[in-house]
Length: 158
Image 1 (cartoon, rainbow, N blue to C red):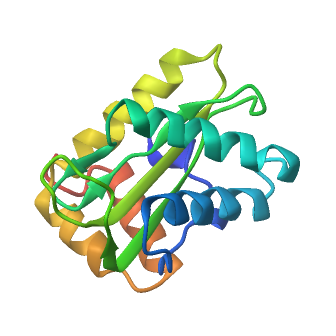
Image 2: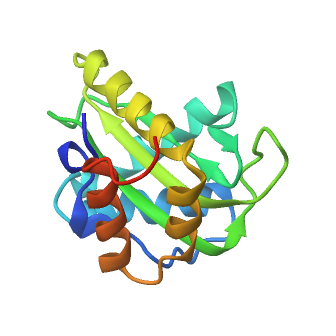
């Protein structure tokens, strides 16, 4: 699975403005809503589902990265977005560091395989230090899109 299979390019946030976990999640779900990937009347339910997942354990996986995700019946296919925070967000990460890179995923409950493949792709790409460093330095949506395309085309070491 590639980023192009699930990342909504119109919902990418190159300059996340939120300063806390809930704010970051709200901003990313809002971007998916604005891009037409999530119904506006379902956004609050989706945000609650993601926050409930966060209660099980932070999806801040360390090294400045978080992958908030949930399964939700309002989507009929896997959707996601990427956000970059230059100042960083306290996401209660496993390593205690602030988060600069966010990959948010929402998938239908009846498609667990897609959900897992997307998480695997994200974690594989994020093991590449060069990819992470460039993504953290991205200043525009175009920069982020370019890096995702390069990752999809195996132009990084992972």
